[in-house]
Length: 241
Image 1 (cartoon, one colour):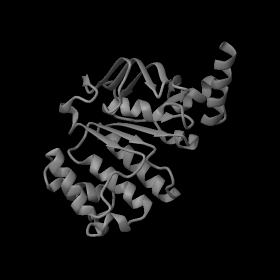
Image 2: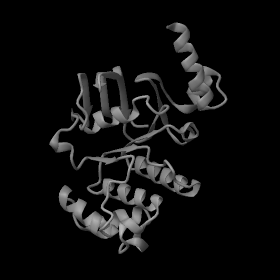
Image 3: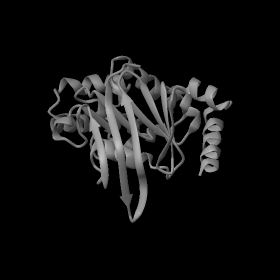
């Protein structure tokens, strides 16, 4: 993985609904690889992601993205963001959706054909998004995020509910993007997806349990897989507390 840092989080504290979601989080994400943000539901993954893309109110700490404060208007075309639910219009075709988002971003119209090809949606270009399967709608959202050739791609649970073949295809796409130098941050609560990542950030109750490569994490904890390693880290944390 390249040494250049695309996300730098320092002392991040977020309170939502009176509850502390992220008490004091510090981490980095680097370009040129796929970083997996893993943890159970409610661990603070989505809150962290919202903080990185600049749509979350934070209480204290800093979040720098590509050298600028998170949410800076100049990051609009440099950061691609895919939410948990497909953020596209059901009453527009695939091409119409992408043309609309290209216009919003100021991306060339030629990018529409490029991103459809990258996510294998060319044959559905004239189909209304509302008539697509859940997996195809997820790919339309990914295509929209790829408009403008982002330097950082942030994906919040992008493979939830998808069939194994589509999950494999999407992970292959993430690695192709990383190979081009894009920083890719993927959140998931599915521990078996950890093996597809170059680096892992394990989160529990808003705290970072580990920041390591999968093989090194298993060697350090003696876990047979990442889920086992995660449980061992949880046990160690509880003992230390």
